[in-house]
Amino acid sequence: MADSFYIPLGDGRWQATAHTTGPWDAGAQHGGPPSALLGRAMQRCRPRDDMIITRFTCEILGAIPVGEISVAARLARPGRSVELLEATMSARGREVARATAWRVRRTGSDSVRSRLPAPPPLPEGPSASPPAGWTDGYISAIEWREVRGGFRAPGPATVWTRMRYPLVPDEAPSPLERVLAVADSGNGASWELDLRRWHFINPELTVHLHREAVGEWVCLDAQTTISAGGAGLATSELSDLTGPVGVGAQSLLVAPRPARP
Image (cartoon, rainbow, N blue to C red):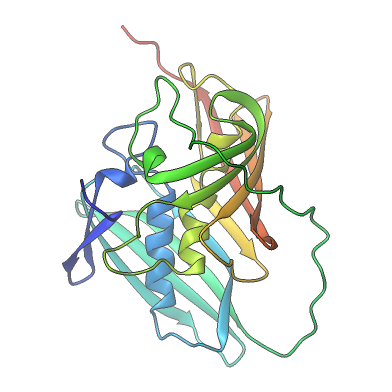
């Protein structure tokens, strides 16, 4: 078993390992690892230690295969205080994901405490396992400590998460990578409909951050709203052990699964 989510192949190419496999399709990646890999590419694009990424959006253009992918990043809008970054992910000759991020200059401004509630304490106990019918891979590559709700009960969920493996070999994940690797799990943790009968797929992920996460653990306090007509929204408050760090959101396509013959 590989000891990272991706293995470098050179020239911006990566081999996705089994740890990236999402719960819906054994041949497709979960959205978390690709988001983290795109974030990593953008952080390495003309890096500036005096800046912090405050908004990240990933557009998932199609199923991202558990196989070879290519990643490229560029500085789309340079600036002294604010910069816009772009990154793309391709597989089998087509673009499968596209991301943008704003980074802003660090200043000496005073801190104003977040009005979001503090996260609950990190619980002890074993990591949650995937329910019957969910494809394993990504689920076991992340440690899940459930406070309320979670994979086995519908409704809002609060869960602490930690990557069991580095994103790439021999490299500690950055704070941004740790958040992006799990922020796409809000809709899965706070599911409202039986996934054996329904799709609730997000074509995008947007994360806003007001500071960098500290440590390995990231908490998702997630809930999902679904309205008649096939649209849904999953939102997550994101925290580390010291307090809130930002919020995530996923728009959802909600549709019945095709009946099996």
